[in-house]
Image (tube, rainbow, N blue to C red; front, side, top):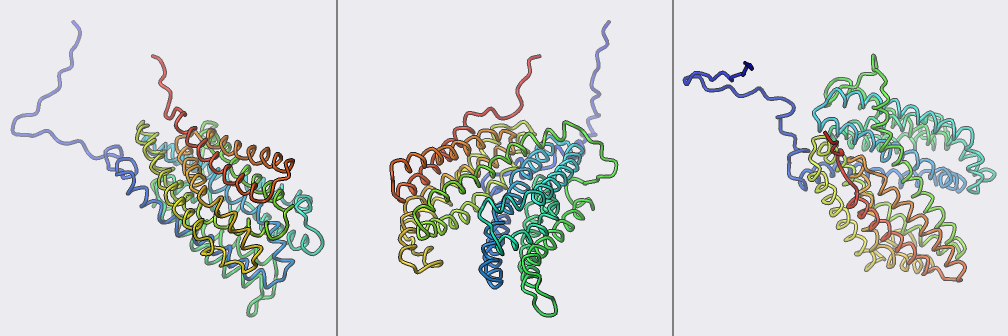
Amino acid sequence: MTDVAVAATPPPDQPPQAPPPSAATTPNPLLNGPILPTLLRLAWPNVIALTAGTCVVIAETAYIGRLGTEALAAMALVFPFVILTMTMSGGAMGGGAAAAIARALGADDTERAAALAGHALLIGIGFGLLFTALMLLFGRPLLQLLGGRGEVLRQALDYVAVFFGGGVVPWLMNTLSAVLRGTGNMKLPSFMVLTAAVLQIVLGGILGLGLGPVPQFGMKGVAAGTLIAFSSAAAVMAWYIASGRARITLRLAGLRLQRRMFVDILKVGAVSCFSPLQSVLTIVIFTHMLAAFGDAVLAGYGIGARLEFMLTSLAFAVGVASVPMVGMAIGAGRVQRARRIAWTAGAVSFTVVGLFGVAIAVFPDLWVDLFTDDPRVTTAAHHYLRAAAPMYAFIGLALSLYFSSQGAAKVLGPVLAQTARLLFVALGGAWLIAAGAGAQAFFLLAAASMAVLGVLAALSVALSRWGARVQPV
């Protein structure tokens, strides 16, 4: 006879005992809380941190200007490579690490999340060393290709030698920040970015200009101040994670390297790296086209591009906040919640960025008058902002969905949308050049490319299958 197991029934006077609470039953606001309030609660620290980053750009421009015109030109040459380093380490590869950790925590697998954090740190160190090698070996020809000559080139190389000589530092800071974001902790990384920004302004100014008893180190001092500030932020976050105060504990001693851990991070992070690459290339191509219309048109476009950078930072803050929410929902098998989070984040980004963009398109002097009183530049900036500023909403939508897709490990679609925008600008610009079109036509091309990017990113998310495929039994 087959044995039949019968559950023991407790005596009537002894009520059944509730099971002890576990990680699986402990309420997790990122996984179970209301979507919009949770998203906004996670996003506001990022807004503050990104605002601090904007202040750094303004402050650095101010004190580098005191070093002379050559120093300003040198910083303009180096700036794209610095931005590429920060966006790749923070938004692209960092997003891949944060998403992988969030998915593991959503599946209630803290050991896997801790192992992923260790592997992410090794990836960050590896990419930091790669950037160091590439810039120290090929920095001179790259800067010369961008037009660096004479004293400008020398000062740019001074900055490159120091900043990229310590190229591992920004990668470590952004990787550790991504690890914390993956656990749902937005406040500490944002506070450390804010602290690093203040230190960067103070130390860069002191070392660059030579204030007080400190000698003037010029561009080398500016770069050194940045590295010291980043190192301080990285050290605090590393201590916080290693001390066990985070949801996971990062330990490199005894870490067993596993191919699947690297794949889980790189399948998102490596693909994501193509997005900032293509974004920078799109800007370079468009700037090169506008240069034919003279300095006034180019300066007017530059004023509009600064606004685009500031407004899309709001979308960046919301998108980064969506990564752990989407990742945990995917890890827990709640695909529909993950999609609602993505569309909610996209709607918030589209609305906020769009409202600011439309306001500036209607009243462009609110922004333009902050930078110039040259009537030729003002006219060009007005034309660009009236055409492009309302379309910034689509860039905000695309950027937010890009980060949400990282959480779902389905980032290829938004990256290909960026590829489509690059081709649209390159081919459309070539056609306009052949037709002898004016600057206004190029401004309309830029605006249309933003709509292309946003629409295609939204379609890619709508058509992509999220969650694990169901395997037949």
